[in-house]
Image (cartoon, rainbow, N blue to C red):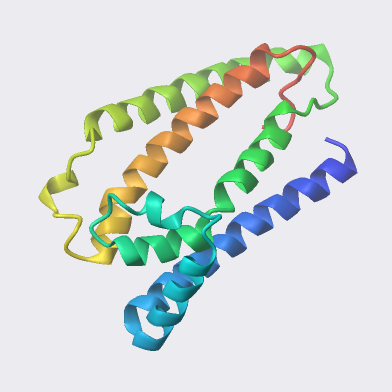
Length: 175
């Protein structure tokens, strides 16, 4: 990666972290204070360009989820761009060191794909471990959303790793 690509990559990671923190804080404050709840719902309703209500339509907490989705939507494009910069950008490396790191990459990609797909397949939209995820916000986030997010991220990283390995003129330095 060039210096400019490193700066863009770090800025995108900062956007992901800050956006996640703001979304979590807004959701927490809205769940605790009625005045914040009313204000944030007014903000969500005033910007129809972001379909937060549609994204939250299947949730047990549609208004609270809409507030979260309204503030968290930049996470997906920013993390997608950061992963694309990280995995699609070739690095300089000699052929001798590439063989060992390619073996590690193939093994890592297979493990990530296997775990990610098995998590997504076994959960199948069910309530995990018998905990009704609609009872509390913490259950919704940690038991309902986190396993699906982990499975999706592992599957995506496995696919991106294979793309990096099989792409033209890329190397695996820096893993």
